[in-house]
Image 1: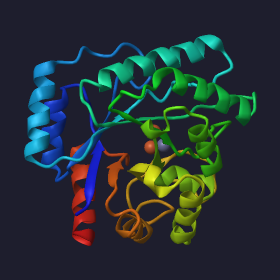
Image 2: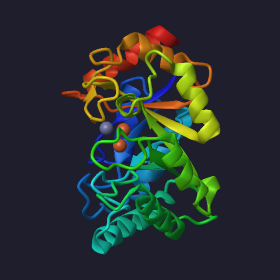
Image 3: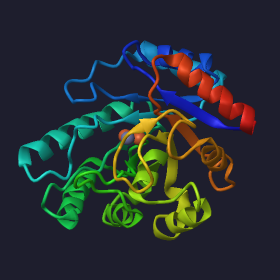
Length: 277
Ligand code: FE
Ligand code: FE
Ligand code: ZN
């Protein structure tokens, strides 16, 4: 069975997101831990969390995926920018423990002229500060498109971050199909080759979530522009091959396609389920 969710608004709480997920035939969802541009997080409501956990258990939900604000830059040269990333991520880690055994995804960051190796050291410093052997959350590095000086557009860079992290059993990867295709991994024409490469360098056991998006821009364009499934350069056939690949079909998929409302996600999930289930 296909495990799939979409990116939902957290404004009305976890129970609301759980119900929204059910209404679109999803068994998980992604949400921002706070305003995507940073800022303070809303207080968690223990009753809301309990009600969501009951609903998730009743309906056999998969782990849910929290997304860190995308403006954080753990690799920044500016110490204040790094301190802000550390503070937000440490706070998110604490809050995630109120919803144990879920996933937390973040963008590794941009080195902005310092070079990837300095940037990677800075990312690892933050991970080695916030991760603890006791935590119940798995932190995911997102594969990036490589726009500007983004770190994490190659499997080798992600592997290096993982290798230099102390609590390696708390670290995984979230593969974004739009980003990897834009980064120059040809998942349209050589999916097996890309997955072999991923397995050799990172290990498919570390692949904990997939952002399922088509790409508005061409292969290897190093841009980050999501498109609706089947409307971009990847195309629907490649996307169906992706979600049905034996090495991937049990993984949870999360739609981050541009939609006017939740009906757009609902239609995409129905399309995938018709092709897969
Ligand atoms: Fe992301
Ligand atoms: Fe993504
Ligand atoms: Zn993106």
